[in-house]
Image (cartoon, rainbow, N blue to C red; front, side, top):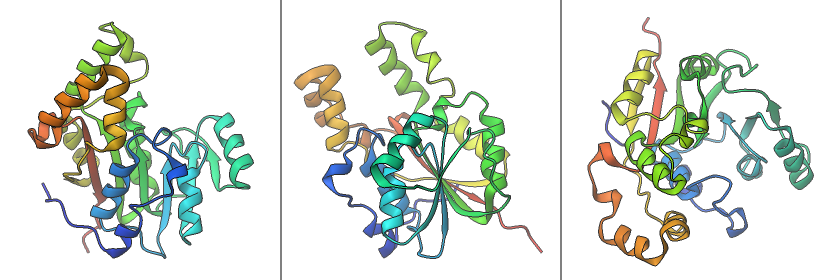
Length: 241
């Protein structure tokens, strides 16, 4: 398995967004941007696809920086809200298992906190492979199967309710095997997850006591297999000549 690489200067520029962007819509936005940075950033001439682009806030920011970006979003209300907020946006309505985009047309595919919601992950990964150019990067964040199930059982007070929306949770090894089986070279990046967004979430569910516990027993210092979320770079192999 490849080792985590430091991000380049352009990746560093993508770590900071205006405070108005917040973290609610994107999950752990700081960690997502850090993953982009550590994977090498986004070069000015690369073409980027975001799966699950929501209202297009991240697309809007990237476009303002001169990047060629496209979003795929299933919810028409989010697409309409994004166009109302940001004007005409390059967002295509579609599903994660039928992207309706040309083969080998993107250099980078971004997918933040979406993978765990896709029931047919085999078909989805096939679609990501199809739209990526050789050597292209698939950057995704997704919850850890083992830690997330425990969290969901506690907050939902149910052993099964979480399955309705987190139907494709993976462990670290399961995720690596699935992506490798589809021809990706997989790197897990050691991105810090305990930041202000993370602590606000803990406080909302468990109060100040929960925050105190996390500060003492930070999951960032635990074993890689037990991190709360995985930050993954999967690179499409270049065909040998």
